[in-house]
Image 1 (cartoon, helix red, strand yellow):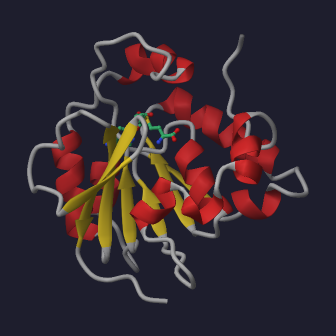
Image 2 (tube, rainbow, N blue to C red):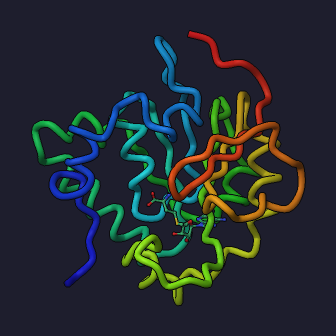
Length: 200
Ligand SMILES: C[S@@+](CC[C@H](N)C(=O)[O-])C[C@H]1O[C@@H](n2cnc3c(N)ncnc32)[C@H](O)[C@@H]1O
């Protein structure tokens, strides 16, 4: 079946309505708490699923995607989301930028994002259902994001409060500075690099 970004129906809608809200691991990882909705830069936007979860919870999101085909799919999904009564206010909190995040972050002007979220591709050996169909399709286009260490360094230099990296649960951390702690989920892990406490 064709692949498209759909924030209105299917998995995104199900997760928005029944996915556990601010109790979800990703929400805790970026610091969502009572009275705290950080401004987040998702520097590896992909199909925007993670960014949509955080925008649904009220975070102001900037998204960067460098692969033009994936960026176009995302733009299309955001445009269709903007036409839906319930989803429009959520996608209004998602600002899409295109280009290489390493450069965009190095040249950032104005107030820095409080939290930078990274989910670079990781070389999966196993062909399990855990590796989502869409991302399996895109791997030949995207590759394995070997520049993840430079991405992490640029994120650490820019974020004012914390950097969060999503990894497969058993995968090593991104090379470079080590995270201070991690949150473990069923299939993913969130490595946390704190800089400053998030306050309400
Ligand atoms: C595993 S996917 C992210 C999936 C995303 N978290 C989601 O929920 O849909 C990784 C994406 O990050 C993008 N990416 C990796 N490094 C990047 C960079 N330096 N600048 C911009 N995009 C990048 C890749 O093109 C790919 O689309």
